[in-house]
Length: 390
Image (tube, rainbow, N blue to C red):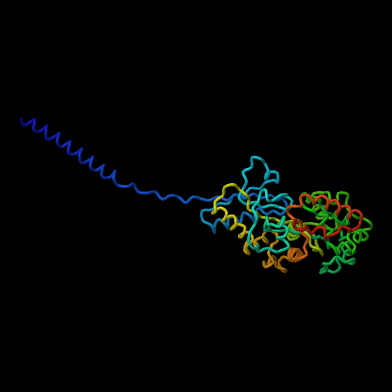
């Protein structure tokens, strides 16, 4: 009997313990599990860049990083593309496109119209209009200038290319071989170098290139003038095979750096009398089937950021030029040559081709300009460069 009681007590103890465990688990099961804080979802904006001339990569990367810091949870992805990729059948298009003149012919098929006032110069903004609508916003620009070997200048302060200055520049520095050619100019791929040379206006009418040719004893233009690569043209100038070079801000920056390193020679810069540039970078919002209001707002904010005062001033770190009239740009004492280029581009009469008709009109203009130069004349009507909005 006593044994049976002990067994019963043991069974009851086990049952009681099991009941306690079940009650404990049931109580905990009723309680809500602690919530794990969800990470905020990052929003991605994709940017395509379709340009080859200006070296915008460093500036764009810096501005995209600044935009991300100002917009928590936003990531910008940059990809450089060719114009053919914009119309590829299987292309997954970006949110924002940055493009050079000639990259697009019919913007309404790819872009959305830009609404609201633009902080950029009116004459530059006009280059982004087509059929009465604004499709692209200029965000950066470059330009052209003549670099002249000044080793023989009697007056070190001379900057204007007068006949006296050209004769002085033609003098051979002691121990140096004379230049074989008066002037070198690249064909430039996407750039219109010969037309820019004609846009020098007064410099050409005063004797360019014939004046230099006379000073050089009849040596005029090299055989590959207006057909060589930009690097070949630059090499002819730095190698003293050409007395003058029509170059871009890139040529000016790297030759200035060469001189600072003690490997160059004295030079002067002649800014155009009639400013011309086809070096513009536009930004536009890409048309898409499904896009949230938040994404559209970010696209608009990015365009405002790229044309903002700080972003525009930051262009000078890359040797580029602002598109706003109220941005200081370059310091006249610290960077005199780039300041001179910027001053010429700041002229309201600057000739700028329309972004969306340039692909069609560029080749005929180049042919006419090259013919005019080879014939020693400047009969090309410069007002034809001013593309009116269609």
